[in-house]
Image (cartoon, rainbow, N blue to C red; front, side, top):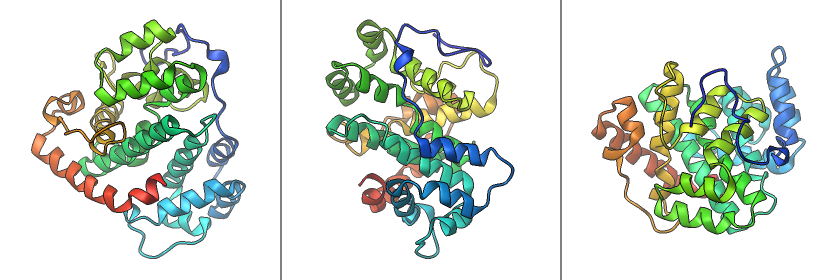
Length: 285
């Protein structure tokens, strides 16, 4: 199942009346960014309303992943140095963590899975020059938002999610439709549309696994979907769900979609793995 650009993702067999609302800090931040030209101070003031979000943004911003030349202790300085798009990405990442109704083992694993994919997507976008790194980050961050919704709404979802992601089940979509009425990809696309985020993010959420984009001509969507598909293997690499698994880049649908040289991608992924391991506590604590 797929949708054309300009279509809707709401027509699925799932209770969309219970979709989560976007966290308040994220709503206020998006509103400010969509206004004229917000100052770093005004943006910092909005983010500072949530101390947990503020602390996490600064913690991640000071990791070597973002190559800060000096330790940054204020939000306004971080915004000036990193830029609004990067800070927006970090705020959305922190807000996603707080979306869970509880933060047990499965919720923590889903958060880690999303963060690794987001960071990996950003790194690939920067190195391959195929997409805006922050847009790739957001697409990677939200690729499994449908799983977060399933976990919050269905009592049987937690066990299913862990078992499916541990073995990277190819029949996951069929089982989801049978058990829940819709796949996590379909639910994720509907959530992002409900939040009025870009159609790019909804389409990537919908096709992050199957990369079925035959009817899509927008090169940016194709590129980001391919990057997120590749980065989607990285959580398994770090043993987020179960034992660490080897990357299978040769068979990666995303690599094939973008016709990327396997050795070049392997080099970029190897570099990312080293950077991530150095900063793992900053990203995932």
